[in-house]
Amino acid sequence: MKRTIKILGTGCPKCVKLAELTEQAAIELGIEYELEKVTDINYIISYGVMLTPALVVDGTVKVAGSVPSIDQIIEYIK
Image (cartoon, rainbow, N blue to C red; front, side, top):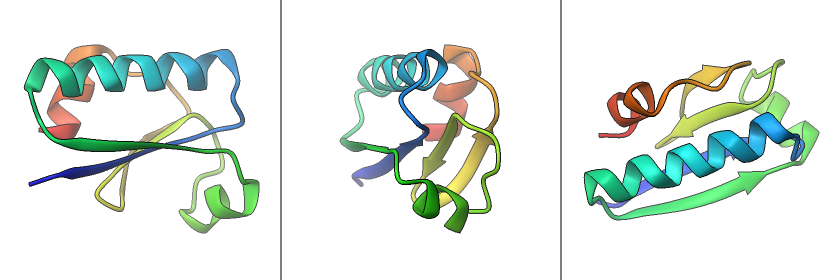
C-alpha cells in the first residue's frame, strides 16, 4: 500500500530536515510512498497544526512542532 506523506512547514531548516529524515526512513523501510511538501499556511492550519514542521501520514498528523528521530519517523510511517 502506497503511503501518502506530507511535510507541513514554511521551508525552514527544521522543515527541510524533517523531509530529509522522512525520505530516508521510507527508503529504509522499502515502502512505496509519495512525499509532498506543503507550505500554504491556510492548508497547514486546516490540519489543526499551529507549530511547524509537522509530519502527516495518510491524512493523520503524527507530530508537530519538532523534528523526531529517524527511529520515531519509521514508527510513524510503517
